[in-house]
Image (cartoon, rainbow, N blue to C red; front, side, top):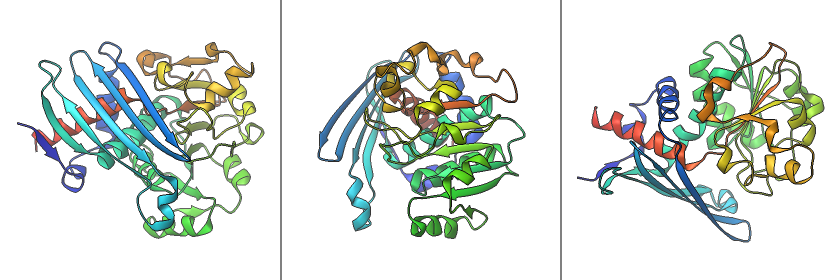
Length: 303
């Protein structure tokens, strides 16, 4: 019987650190087969992401990204997630798109941070005050419960709305100053021109990049990539697909070997010293949607 898993009821059942454990376990299974299909019209995108993991199952996530929706107070991203049996291909669950996206996106970043960020990190900067930024606040709060959070957003209005939701967050008026003062910088913007400059980075920082998902998008410049030990969630869905890495590779700034590892080689996710600058590119691959959907389905079934 197909389960319909809604946002509100399922969201209450989930735990951030348990999700990172589930994601780590999922990467001990055979490497996922993944395929992304993107269609574009003007600045709008239709993104279909599919994944199949032997021993886990299949998932298809369909997302529409319409950036201009925000002006009409309509969610910018919409879609659906379907989960199928690995054994016989039957439809097991239809999950709320925003539920899977919330937990998958921030959960992937949190898994990387558990291994790459300094355990004593106490100052966390969120760049981008949208829905993903809210999820990042929740996720990082679970791992660093005593941390102080700062928000920077292009519009002050957006930053104020974020602060109204999370009153303990301080609004940063200047991005450069905020980056220099932070232990962790987590960025979720729709930028095509780098916002975060490598010259601003300080020894010991961890940089978490989420926003870029197209070949023309990036949130940091070449200097930031060059100064950092770079990791990704999946080599197959980031290096040749997302501007954050595709552009500097194409321009000869770095070669693919500059990326140290993905989640399928999690033991390599570590610092060599406290002064390392680590950078994680969260590509949000479909394998993470599948793992997260299974995690949610299991919590829903056991409720």
